[in-house]
Structures are given as C-alpha cells and as structure tokens.
Image 1: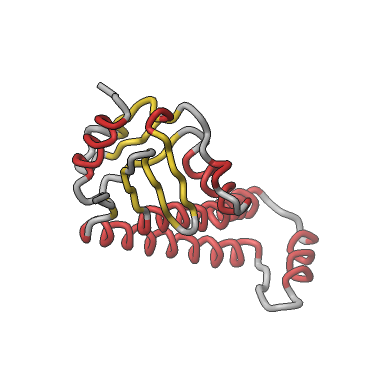
Image 2 (image 1 turned 90 degrees about the vertical axis):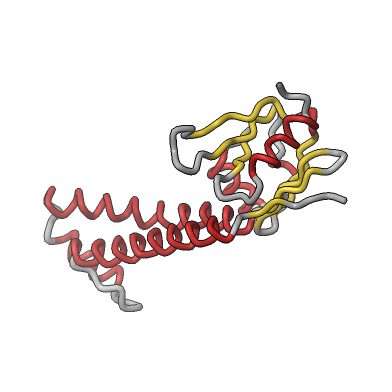
Length: 182
C-alpha cells in the first residue's frame, strides 16, 4: 500500500495565514497604486484618469511608490499561487518514483532522477527541504500556464518538500532509501 503525504493541520493553518497576509498586501498595493497616481478604477475611466495623471507629470515622490506597488500587484498573486500549491500538495512514493500532485499538476519523478535532498533554512523552527533533480520533469505538465507557474515557483530541477508536511521526515527517509541517497 502506498502512503500519501500532505500538509498537516498545523501546516494548513500556517499556510492559510500566509495566504491571507499575501492577499491583504495585494489589496493594499492596488489601493495605494490608485491613490498614489490619483487614477480611477471605474470601468471606462481607467485610461482617461491614467492619461490625466501622466499629463500632470510624474514626480519621484509619486513614481517610486507607484512602481513599488505595481511590483507588489504582480508579485502578490504569484506568491498566493505558490502558497496555495503548498496547501494542496500531495507526495506519494511509488515503485516507479515519487508522485507529486497539486492543482492539476501531476509529476512522476523517477527515483533515478533524484540527485539530492537539500535542507533549506535548517536553523528555522520549521525547516524545509528541496528535492534536487537531474532532469527537468516540467514537460509532464501539459497545461502551458501551469507549467510556467510551476517553473517560475521552483525552477526546472527543484521540487519543494514543505516544512508543514505531516510525517515529513518519514517521507524524506523513504525518498533517500528509494533513490539510494546517503
């Protein structure tokens, strides 16, 4: 029988708090961007109000905060997506390899493709690990948007082993054993 590992109840609470925090940052960025540039988000008025604001000239005290908020407006949803991936991730060691599933992404990482398990922030209260791979498995993701988001979040040869996974040390030991890692 194959055991599936997923986020613990405590891990879910922590992830939910992180998603709420990232959502609040995103809302703050949208609101601050609007007020910094004095634009209207009303349908049909966005471009006109943006043109009027640009016509008044952009000073450093308006441009720098607006650019910062624009970065946050893009980064916060990506962060929320990455955190949501942690919320739903499932790892299943099988005879053929490690099955990784989250949000329509299903990867089978053959044991021979696992090169190392690396500790991330080992001094943390909840250290996490990453699985280092020899070959990029992202071609298994048929949806190009999901593939792009997955690669953006983790890179092409890394798979996260989140801190909040229930029985995470057991999973790591299982991966080490099956992939013949010391």
